[in-house]
Length: 336
Image (cartoon, rainbow, N blue to C red; front, side, top):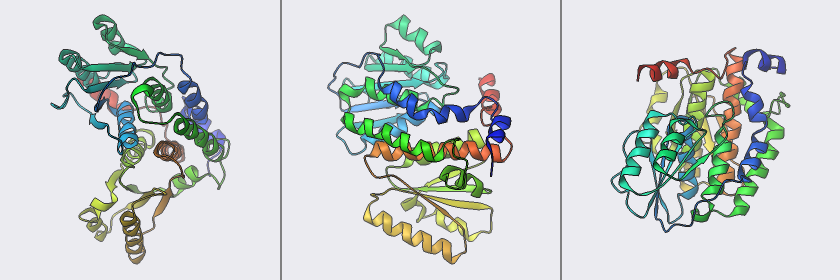
């Protein structure tokens, strides 16, 4: 079991301290003084961003999935051809210098569609000022991935006039973060800490299974394990894997399944979880189940992300790795 001295030693830039403060950052961000967007008649929102910024688009798609607003996610250089006058393009780059996102911003500006951009500064801020594009500057904490709640809750507030999300649901999601923080933060490095317990168990490559609606959680967890823990990770949708991926377990390889379940999964999805569990038991494959809280989709998703992000930090420290540096990403950026 790791101790605070281990966090101090290996998490050199103190990423874990930012996570300890996530509920406070979320509340402060939602109470932002930045101006909200004007009400628009739209039926399509495009969320563009990469990495930690791209994960924001994934969570908005989860939130809006069962509403009348169609969402598109762009993680690249090109906007979909469905962008028109009834579309809002939301461009996010925490650093403000992401090459792909800057390209999307320029493309959207050329199309003269509804457009708003978010960053902590950088080239995106400069371009928006030059082109008089609607822009909001949001504070960065530590790194793009650690700044997740700062950007999420600020954007929720700024887009509030056009989003079919109740204010009460947003406030409740912050309250749930506060409750969870007491259990999984660095102030509780005990066996009752579910994030730490999962990190202690995870000594092989994780295969993350998720239901419809929780893709944002699974992809975020995969990315956090890759960036923070410096390990490989795989994510698969549970229904789809029953048609292909499940066969991989017939090989004797070093993987561990993690099942991310929702409290209100579709009855057929619940049936599939049971079958999957029976299969793993029959093969004597050890697996873990992570179950969402009750409540609205925002509360479920952000709580799971919070819990699993902590796991990635604790796992890094267990493996005596600093979760902050991303040398391989920097290598690629220098070559562009």
